[in-house]
Length: 231
Image (cartoon, rainbow, N blue to C red; front, side):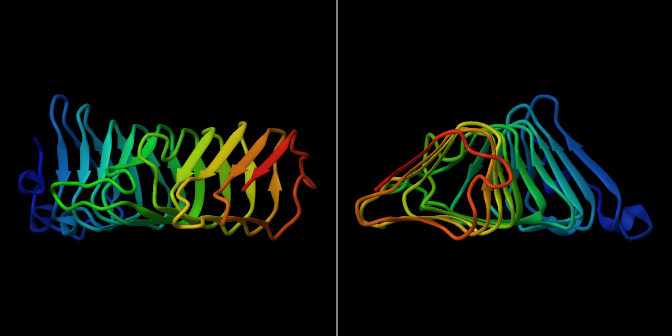
C-alpha cells in the first residue's frame, strides 16, 4: 500500500506545492493519505483499485478519487470534488467545495442504530456547496442525516437517512427520485429550501411524526411528472 510515509517531503520540491497537479496511484493496492500537509493546496488525484483512504482533513484545490473511497476525515476544496467510485463515510463528515459529485453509490460505514466494534458511529453528512448525485446515497447503510448548503442535482434514484434531509438550495431532478427518512424516533424533516424542478417523479417519505416542507416553487421552471408525499 501507499501511505503518506511514501510521499516526498515538501522540501524535496524546492518550492511550495500550492497549485501543483498531484497524482497518487497504486495499480494493485490501497492508497492512504494520513498526513494532509504533504498534499494540501494541490489539485489532488487518488487512484486505487482497492481503496483510497482519507485519514486526515484535506484542504485542496480539487479532489478526484478513482476507485473505492473511504472518507475518515473531512475534505475542503476551492473547486470540485469528484468521487468516481463507491464512497464510504466513517462517522460524521463535512465535504466543502464548489460542487461535490458522486458518480457511484455512497453509504455510511455503520448503519444507523448498528454497533461497530471499532467505535465508528453513524454519519451526519454535510455538503457545503453544490451536490451532484448520480447514484444512490444511503441505500445500503443509511445516513443519520443529510444537509446540503447549495443547489442539488439528484440523479441517483434514492436517498435514505434516518433523520433529516435538508436541501437548502434549489433542486433539479435528473432521474426519478425517492427520498426516505426512515427512523420514527428522529421524526425526520425532508425540506426543500428553494425551487424544485425536473421532468421526473419525486417521492418523499418520512415517519408519522416527520415533516415534508417546500419553501420554494415546484415545477415552475420544469414541471415534475408525479409527486408522492407520505408521512
